[in-house]
Length: 368
Ligand code: GDD
Ligand code: MN
Image (tube, rainbow, N blue to C red):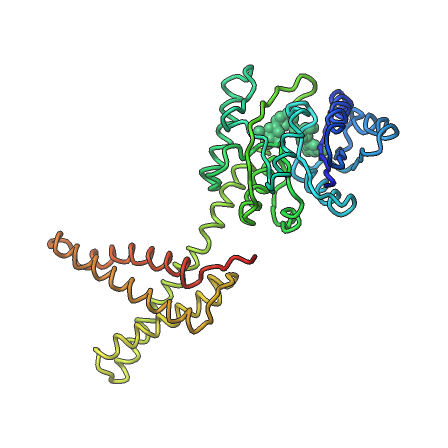
């Protein structure tokens, strides 16, 4: 497999020649075709010149130059180049400052060989570690970043979401629209991981020791931290979006229901007939809106007629739950206004309605 180790650099002139040498030593024992791609953002310290010197000695070193626009932008450029120009099967993410040990490269690669799509060199699984010399603040920053990613963005299963040491199969990357990630800095790590999870990539974490850099300095700035938190909120909001649309449709159903009910009464229809008719019309309008708006991207296995019937069945069940709640509350709290009982009943009914429709009526069929 053709494998490209992508190393973004900004002012890493003191590190990059040593790292390249060290990686070359590792490559000797590996059975894959190993390359290095340095993505340098016109570092004023002459990082690129160091790389160019080595390019005349080694054939497997590539250099991509550009304007400094953040870690994520550098990786986006590097990954596109690795896939389009270098025909990569696998790409690595790796820091230039020896925080990631070159000796760990074969270990990450071995997991790809065993069938993983996305291997993370993880500091937070058992056996992994962060530098002992890190003070309270650095520890907290790193822990906090992972807590935000795990619990705000919802990536619960991964222990080290912000790790910058990864091996990724390009079959996953080819299905990601990088222009839609919408991040420029360090938030890229979480945004990319989230996309891989969405694509159901096989993610594996293996323990690594993260070593503190001895030369040069970290480039992580306040802009990166702000973007990081906004990105986590954005991911959370997007996963809520479907539910919000469903709720909007439900609210529109109330208007349709009452509107038709009034119309029927004005037309002289008996109210005991007008009521179920209006209810059914609102169920159908809710179904159509959910079908053509809320869940329009879902590929479902049923025909639209079957989906409509399922939706109807769920609506009746929700009606039962809503009514059951109303009756129960009326018995236990007889002094409270009945409007309140009716209102509370809407909550479990809406949740049930959403989950059954999302996971049954409009269930996405896996495409493979
Ligand atoms: N081309 C380019 N452009 N490279 C950059 C930029 C940029 O804007 N910003 C950082 N880099 C390079 C650095 O030169 C280094 O090789 C690598 O990216 C990591 O940058 P550091 O500045 O050393 O990052 P860190 O040590 O603070 O952060 C590490 O931990 C983070 C959180 O755990 C990295 O591993 C991150 O990837 C990781 O998210
Ligand atoms: Mn670093």
